[in-house]
Length: 135
Image 1 (cartoon, helix red, strand yellow):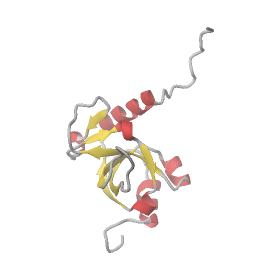
Image 2: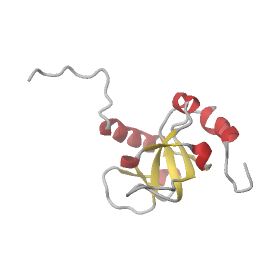
Image 3: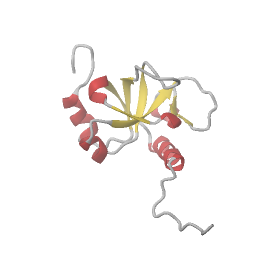
């Protein structure tokens, strides 16, 4: 860890790559942002697995916001010891080596099931695909 409290590549190997990646909650800097993307330093839930994180310079995350807007794709994190809501519609891949991060802890199994279920639905991730009916 450097003087600013940031973790770099070595810590990433010990935290996100040596252990399963999905379910970790990190605090990282989302700036710069474009349009209505989240900005500034905030928590995020890791949604990519060991295999992706180990082979990529990117980590898939869902940013967390503190306000409850009632949006159906926002998952409360109360059972994780955090006040906030995972904004699943804003899932993105970030380079945590460049942004720096701090490990906050794990998300609960119930929270991860809800987040991953929404992601599967957003991208229609079913395999094998059901046969298409001819038009």
